[in-house]
Image (tube, rainbow, N blue to C red):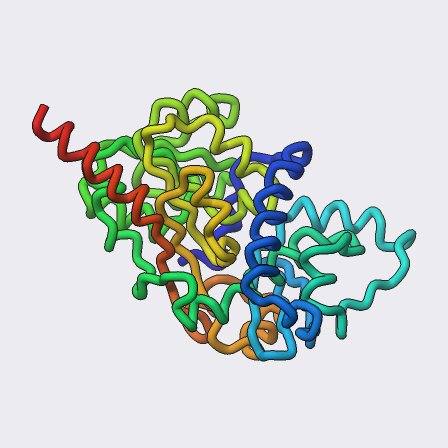
Length: 302
């Protein structure tokens, strides 16, 4: 993984935040139903906003992380002298994800909190989890298909190259990433809609959730295409994403919250998190996957 696996962000979408707010609102509703009264009993132990990731840990020890969009840092820098100091410690889980959270970093803090609150249900099996977390374990979504990746994750690109994909179009505005990638064709941002409309599999990094662009991007994808969302930021209960046609969420569950937040506080990114305090998981919409498999069999029969 690169230092921040979701740092290659994609499509700036300051005006698209309302769409992803709906996704997160639905995730909050799911978690409120699963947790019940515990939403008013669980309290925040610690919040850390880092340059690459943001982390939240609750009183039950569960923690979540989410990508810190650079534009959030830029916006916060213009408000730092005018805003009142915010204190999140001791806020209830319900206040963190169901209310109007204060502060310049409120959206990403809320997202990290949703991820933290989802961990118990991954561990208990209440939300089915496929261990391993490698996208190559679901080859039918990628092999022999036209891929559009929004946000270039270099290790994932290399794995896709070994899976026999038909072609890869990459939408990523970071010049550093373009120089590092050895596979795929980079597409100008202004061609985002038409490129997604022509793909057979769309892959979005979790940064598209953090920066508010995912809902709009999903609207460009054909209804019969396969969709995967990948990265630590997508670590919340997957029902809202499944409702929008996502077949696979490749994400993580934090296994050591204290260490994860310490890494974030020291400016650490994806490499350090993946090598120490998270485990990869796949969240799969089995019905959607079955439909894609059937579609593939029909295509093979001609």
